Length: 374
Image 1 (cartoon, rainbow, N blue to C red):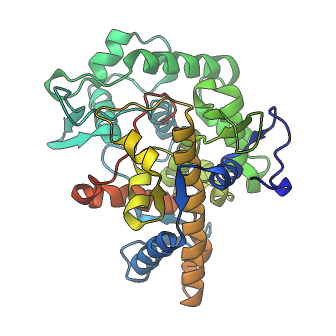
Image 2 (image 1 turned 60 degrees about the vertical axis):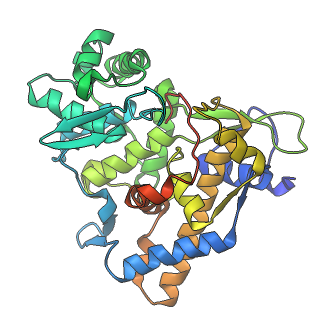
């Protein structure tokens, strides 16, 4: 049962992602966060930092550090300018639901770009690059604000004519964000960032609030009923909004428009792949009921279901604990990287680790949701 200190008061109060993860994890029926697994993951991360496999790079001017998991891939914007901001905003506005079923006649969405074949979200990035290379201003708000389903489908089409999922929903998101930019921000997301700079030590949280308030398609929230409570509370995850801020931070290497002194206030980006890595390390233990649900052939979990909320909320809490444990280990080793490690870097490690151990990860089930939020 949630204690009075957790301040569950009314169903009108919205809890931020970190608060939400804490409350959900304390009430979860189907997931247990295991200290042994948290410790194991933290040791892996600290070992990789110690031996240089994870590098937290120092910028002596701005005194910020970025993680080598945030290196710019060729399918991401390469230049920290206004065009790069438009590009990042476009990518993260559509950064959702690229998974496909692994059985039956379903074909995976893949895109080959410059002789490299990409899957999932990176396939979408590759398709965007391919379109921009052809001279089409796909990431420009005035262009995508009037884009049609047929046009977007033709731009994002995968190899062997496999369509990108949820084209209708993606067009709807683009029309929405373009309309907001035109009406309130002079057709540029750069102006959204600048509006949040008055309080530099809260810039990330200011931008997170702006995204939630002004752009409904970024409003990643759910109604949750804690144990022994009669009414629901509002919990938030804000996956795409937080990863947008992180991508801007990475693009600008923590400087200029991408300087977020409170980048450490962000949580991990609650999706469906990081929980596999958490299971791998033993940080997550699923109930038999949840395992059975996830083992159903071609299961699609309902958005807003208790299962989904628990998986996402417990992921936020678990990654937060892993970050703190890793910091403690590094402090004992007198490694000053500890004060620059954050949940964003740990998320990128866990997401990349899932790809690194792709074959071993197949035995750990993950939930699938058709949603615009992740």
